[in-house]
Image 1 (cartoon, one colour):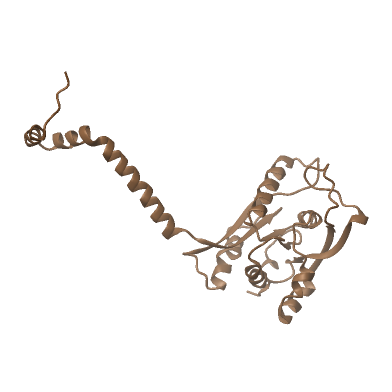
Image 2 (spheres, one colour):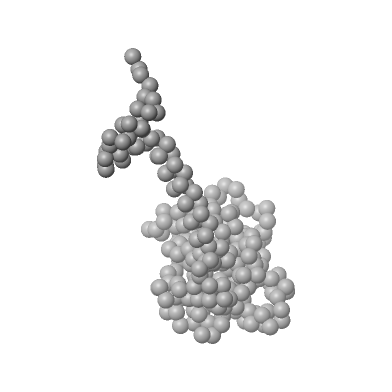
Length: 245
């Protein structure tokens, strides 16, 4: 038969315990409420910590078919933040590295290229990619498939000084017109001459500024993602890349 322990019996039992016995007693009787409280405290602490340490991402940038050593990566991220006096304690620039793109079906890294493409397109869909720095192959692929902003249109919206600085470095590429995509192609549609036009879809970055002496084997091209919601920051970033150190 179950007998309920009274408060006075608990009090007498407590008085008889010493040291570790009291700790064991409390744990035996109250371990469930204690565990619940600890979990709630952990969750509340995590939320508070996340709130005060969360950084605002001012720009999302990706390096495609190229790599940057630590000094250059720092210039591409923290250097830019410092140039606009954003600091690095509450703001950040997200730099995606290790991305690889190719349209060659015989490329030995085809599977890796596919994984990179999935990551990039997901980032574009989520508006978490603003600028791509890449080689000519990747630049043409993104241009042909309509992911890049037409810089001819952008230059008309810029001030005269900025437009004059960018114009010598404009690079044209073939752009697939809307509604002419071949749906039978799962990844990249083919481009026919009748379904395409040539526009200024990027900038060559290798001749001036940060990339001039970076040691890349070939030219580096910059493309602006068409659906970027951070165009003002993109313009600041391009001007920073072109600035002479």
